[in-house]
Image 1 (cartoon, one colour):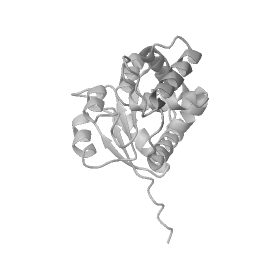
Image 2: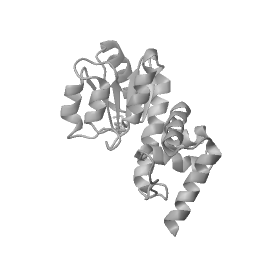
Image 3: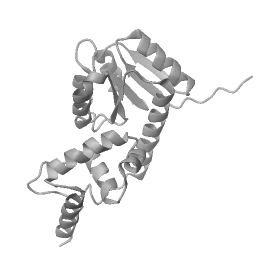
Length: 213
């Protein structure tokens, strides 16, 4: 009798299009994940508060509350699993807004199944790695007086950046696409009032020195 392949964890998929749900279910199941599909956000919320999946795929446009509303209700930044938003090509502004509200990244339609599996694998592994390290980084402890506070993910990106990582390297470490890293970086520079990359590093180093006095 063939041995049962152990599940790599559950993935929750929220999309009101049955074809998208079927495709994702087929592709992710073949990759070893258990897939639970929902047609709207209310059904997801009922389960996501009591059960933590390996990852959530959440469409921006769903009946009732939008994917963005659901993300806010889940407190995306603090939710114990990565959340990806699924968006059409015209939803980039909304996708960026979702990232500011704690989504890890977004996946654009139309997508290729193999690409999604690779991206989710990377994100889930990166997330688990960061949870295991669970170290309070120097950046996490920094306060930038008079500046708009950085989100936890912005601090993670800033830490990669000040360690000399490129967008690609930072993305690989955090399980995020380089383009989303670039969005975070632009947001960090705006919040901290940095004119360019060198200015940003100077602000961080100055703040670190002041914190050591």
